[in-house]
Amino acid sequence: MRLIVYNARECDPKKCTTTRLHRFGKIQMVFHPSELPRGAILLDPFAEKALSKEDVKIADKYGLAALDCSWKRIRWAARIRKQMSPRCLPYLVAANPTYYGRPTTLSTAEALAGALFILGDKNRAREILGTFKWGPTFLELNHELLEAYASAKNSTEVVALQHRFMHPTR
Image (cartoon, rainbow, N blue to C red; front, side, top):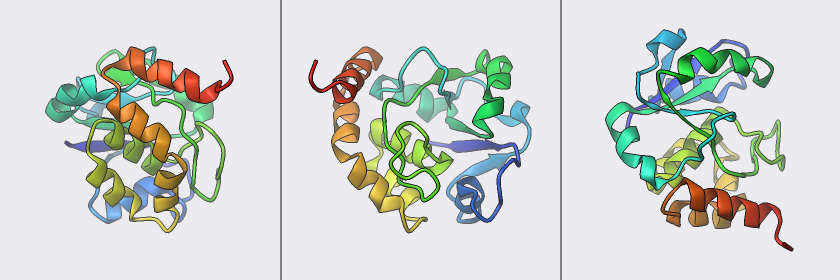
């Protein structure tokens, strides 16, 4: 599965997970949104459909794409969403040093690894995270969540699991 990340060059290159993944040959990095492959799964926090294993065929055929840009500016991505298959990641907790413990505020590396795990490529998710000292912690923090999401048949089941994890007493 091809991994492509659009890098908007908005973060410190020394802290940028995308830059590090690219340097280690783990991803393809592009610098213009038009370079993202049409039809690919786009990890998009505003997508109406959650990523699930039913998306494996699309990801295998067209790739898995992420946007490395400020959340404050991410709404501009509306025009590229039309050419791709946008999917949001379910509830996961960050392990990166900047946002440790914060739900849904993942680094690009964590987002890609979470997506790979859900899509069934657990080894590649570990490989991506192995590039960072804190990477294995992401899998530890989210182990139960990721295993559950990976076992879900479709987006509806992923959303139901997410709801159960976020509201355990209901």
